Length: 297
Image (cartoon, rainbow, N blue to C red; front, side, top):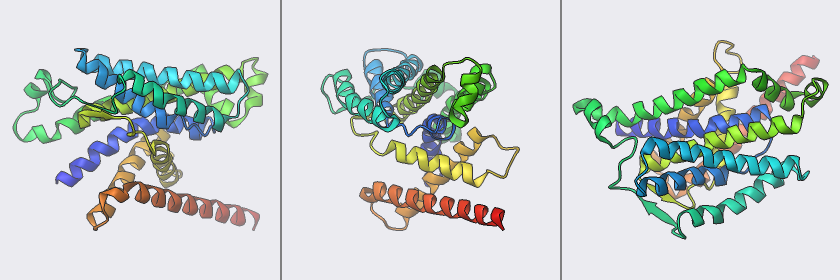
């Protein structure tokens, strides 16, 4: 049971981050490596804010703002200075490593074990008692995730949201509407990295510490999650893509947990992640080939 709870907690937290990766990878078709930097940015902002007496919920909003700023920088570098998308993300990700250390006052880690978090406070203790206590983190994470998902779904239905979809699929459509595709792309990167940083903030409060390298491999996890969800439910018209991403995140974390439970050491988790991601890419590529071959036949 503890393993199931752990999978759900981690899966739901990474699902928040994966919603951001879904925007860049699926909607914008933008290989954004900023994610590896904006995830720990959200975590360090939450940690520093909480140690300075800021309310945990406000700390998450500050994390959200920090991620949005990171996405804005990547967008400006790419759109205004005409730097290639991949390089734009690498530049911002590299800079964020030092920026995160500056925010943390040059500390590589910040513990918040005895500090109030969204999971450990008077209100949470009063609501979740007895047997319900072990499910408290899952419920709280789920609330944050549902809010993020609903707001994203609502945004994608707005005019700005439709333009965001169009700029990834067909930039000419955006230009024909006399809209600046570059500005739309920047907005998408801002929203995406804001969600990623929010996931980092929640992760920090759940684990009760910030570590400067906690964002390493985040983009791979996010991509694996998105690809699993999208490919698994691409024929299910009634399931929204955002919901598919959330389910994909839980499936991904379950696969990693099963691999570790079978005897693989925890230090191989990144290796497991890379191998799993490679398998997913190969499988999805083979399916695309079969679809094309059947179409030609």
